[in-house]
Image (cartoon, rainbow, N blue to C red; front, side, top):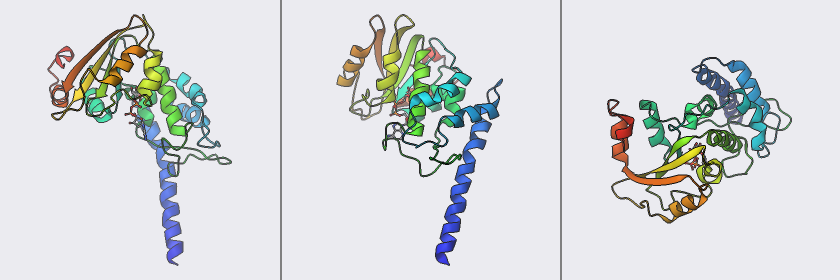
Length: 249
Ligand code: APR
């Protein structure tokens, strides 16, 4: 009897999880005007339903990306690596920069997990491969694809918030290093401004070896800048909307 109860509870909770992704997607999508969100969901699902969740290449999301093309916001585009919470706290409170998670495509799936299964037409939110379990997993391929699209429309002076509390702020395996930086083309992109977020007990500064690699990676013509900025300074700007964006650091 205990086994049956456990099985039923497990089954119910799994089913509940399964049904939560679509309402979240639709609700977040509706924050953006002019899109047919049911249609967006259908196009999204086509990328992975019925497929092995470890065998979804990033190209599978091409139709989804095409359904809501990313808009360039020259001089205001913000990239990041290992600084997610700080960056989004800042972009949420201040209208200075835009991240991919502020776009429709990034916003509808931010923080979510989903996958399909061979021989099934359902969307699952549990039992999906984790980020590093396999290269072509449903979630990772989506972020690779949407990040490619975001970097492809980057223009003017772009900013990247990197984490100065780790030894390798520009890590080769990150999306920022492995995908985004490679797609910054001169003269579409004029400069890359690294904001290296430091804390009281800081580990790195702008002379960091991985940042040398970043400079080497940049397309000829793109100007590189690096600034060490304390986390407190950024939080201060988040909570003082009267402070001009240009005075944040
Ligand atoms: N496990 C789970 N999720 C991961 C993992 C992992 N090992 N690695 C990355 N992610 C997901 C998480 O959602 C995480 O918040 O990718 C996000 C970013 O990972 P980071 O390593 O912090 O940074 P990076 O890989 O450089 O990606 C950030 O890509 O999303 C775009 O434009 C955005 O510039 C940004 C960059």
